[in-house]
Image (cartoon, rainbow, N blue to C red; front, top):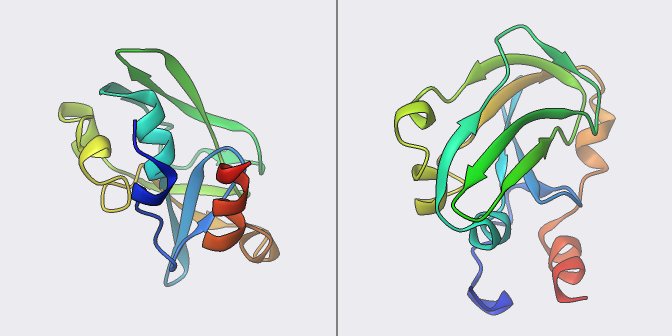
Amino acid sequence: MKEISELNLPEDVRYSDDHEWAQKSGETIKIGISDYAQDQLGDIVFVEMPELGDSFEKGEEFGTLESVKAVSELYIPLSGEIVAVNDALEDAPEQVNEDPYVNWIIEIRPTVAAEYDALLSRDDYLKILQE
């Protein structure tokens, strides 16, 4: 396990209490799991993702990650419609461990824009991890 100081926590993404991240990409938002989450899970062996066109409300479960340690639910950090899934993770789920920010899981078209601004900054997320 990494020490808190060893975690990769980019400044240009927002974070949720559930350890997902969100990053604006034009009109859409890419979502994945934080470096802390992938480190805690260990080797990821399977990623279950939703279907294109599925819609979720903030906080709803949108998929799961299976690791050699456990199965962990994924919770969507803001409401929206699925416009893309990272198909590469079906054949190579371990890519999430290699770089959880490059290897996003889903991309959504948000339905409540203000929810993005309510997510945690890097510093606020770091405070949660340190507690």
